[in-house]
Image 1 (cartoon, rainbow, N blue to C red):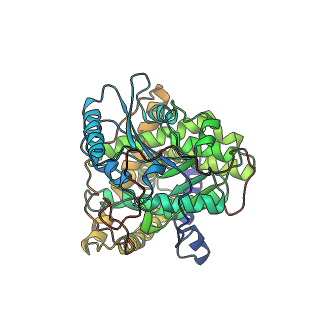
Image 2: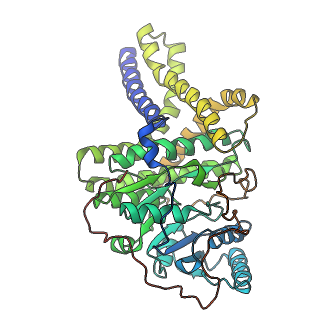
Image 3: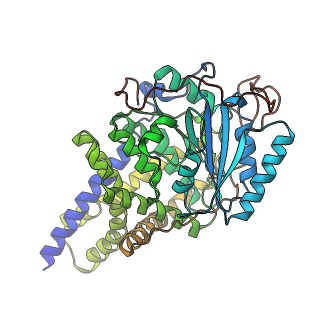
Length: 469
């Protein structure tokens, strides 16, 4: 019996070790590689040619939504080429009131490109709100921002340049959590985003199998209409739509540039963090079960997508496996070889930790911050608890999936990332985050033509193009 248990332990250990080693490879995929300079933002912007519709899905976001709307409408892009749609459900009276007040304030200033979209049907979730906004969108390009986002004032100019010059229909730009010291789990949460957008997504884009992020992604509107919008039953509609785009053969251009990332906050409480991660994990499980990944054209693409979507199962397994492995080593007197093999995943997690420490210093240096010397010690003390929290969220997601629960667990936002870091990336002569003097803008005249015909991105049915990753 013991031999059977030890064999199973070794088998699981080897599987988890391969998974952990591959994750480590993805974390450092683009680390300081000169060829990946092409993934940064262009140094010189093309003239504005594409019109944009920015969609802001919001629910119970009255504390943060007005600032976000203000930041987007005052971005460094001609106002007549920008439409802002805030989407709320009819029962969210607080957010509706905050948005209406901001729209009235903007109209008093002569700005009339922001609108409120209210829906009163089911389901009450983000993808349904996005689909409601899609029906009212006029821009050549759709983009999504979350209610608390701090988008860079030049990001539309960056994306306009990339889409026009490279003739791509989908762009994913960087998103970065900022408040790395707010809670004991915040540092690792921040670094997950750092490695995901700075490194891992480039690997996915190169191989044509990419689960998109939930915001700062840009779509040709005609492409989204052709796809029929977002899957309203999926808790990670962003990842699912990314795989559908890849299945069409459409390249996705990933841009990561520390200067132009969209800044966000980590969840304010541990419970909120667990609920957010549960939703993401369950959404991956839903997408895996739906089988969108099976439509990808090559075996390599399908394997990468399946591997990525199955990750929550591996995470849940690791959470159960680790204490089980320790217990067996202590009480079953396992052979030395079995004991060493059983701890391989733990040793690889230690390598993850060291990589995270280096990543923290890269992240803080890039954003003009200086971490406390004690933070590394804090990271060492909280590394294992963080892994168990992540594993618990995966187990919780699996339990919800098996129970058939698909309700949306909302993440609270308090704006902890706002004002924490000065905007040091702005070129001389351009506007700051809120459009102070120097910005390059279009007319604020309410009579300016907002629906002018501008060159749109290429047809969604065209074949794959070069320069896509």
